[in-house]
Image (cartoon, rainbow, N blue to C red; front, side, top):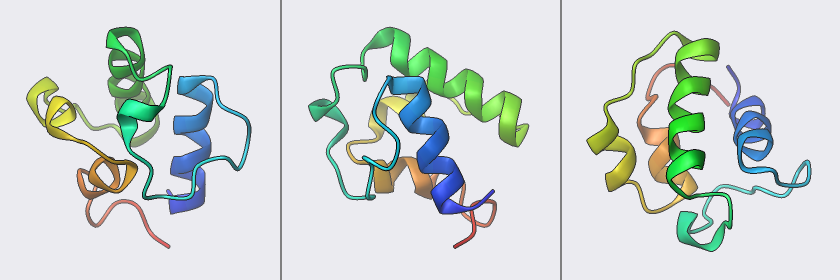
Length: 77
């Protein structure tokens, strides 16, 4: 998956406008980054990337870039 594709999936999960994520945003600034959003993100990761992301890893993420780093080597430019 490309980084742009990842951003698009995250935008969809969080109910954001297309092309609104640039990569360094703080997750806490997204209204949709609540408990449902986090679970939806983990579901997307499993469905789209076939990766079961541990909850504690998602909870430790503070920025979009942190989320991307969970998929090092899987998300490409």
